Image 1: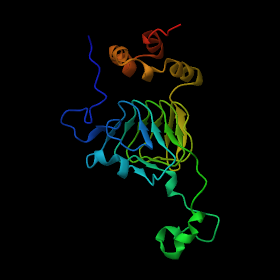
Image 2: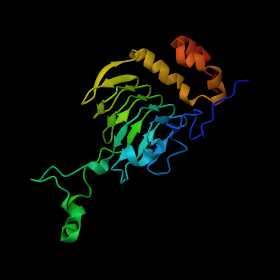
Image 3: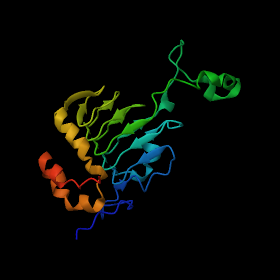
Image 4: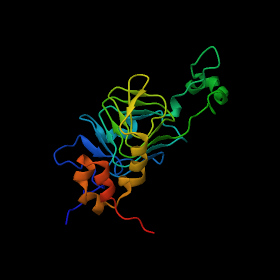
Length: 215
């Protein structure tokens, strides 16, 4: 019987310390990551929480689904990076201390876009930047160097700065079928039996392989 991969291993690829699974790595209560989502970095992959999730002071969360692939240098800019823009200066004087700190109310309660949410099976190319509060749909591809400033639809391909939707990987009827299949929720044993179909099969073959749903 086929044996599933282990989602609890920090380094899933023998001899490749640059690749880490994020679920067993991440400790912050403000970051949620699904099983088998990985990050690849030749320098400091285990420093993902501090090097790749920036200005994360809360309460907004970063939520990443299962089976996502993050290339080197993918960064999530969180809402703590925001500055006031309604006055002559954008400089955050109160954080410098002294009597300036008496005006801390001027930098609290800034508008926020909420949590940053990434769906399942999303592929991020090298050097992608994701701005605060963005929602990226299932099956999306984000091209190398893209700056994602707005929501990305399911199975969308986005590139550029600011990121623009290039096209979708499937038409809407096919996307609806893929979302109904939701292969990322399959039991690992069943998924393991159909890896070849997931990677190279047709949509029809994937539908045939899907486990029967309980009535």
